[in-house]
Image (cartoon, rainbow, N blue to C red; front, top):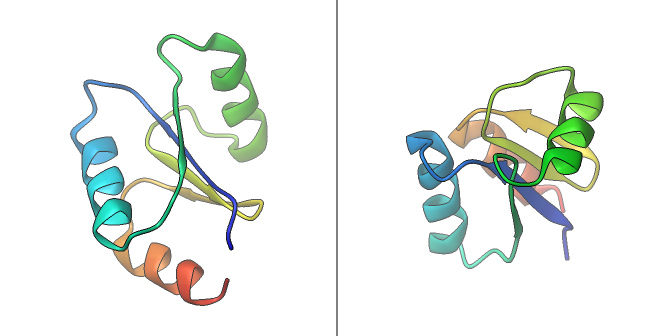
Length: 78
């Protein structure tokens, strides 16, 4: 089973799309709201070098933004 974390904010439409996509696939994930968890936000930036959300971490690989093809590819490989 993949270890999946979604770094998001409540007002981000692409964050909502990522979470809906993962829910449709029946994939369990941890959702971290970086607008309220500043330490997690710093960790996210350190891992990816990017400040934008959503960021999806799947088994230590970072996908920035709602990239459906990259998400499907990564989910198939785990």
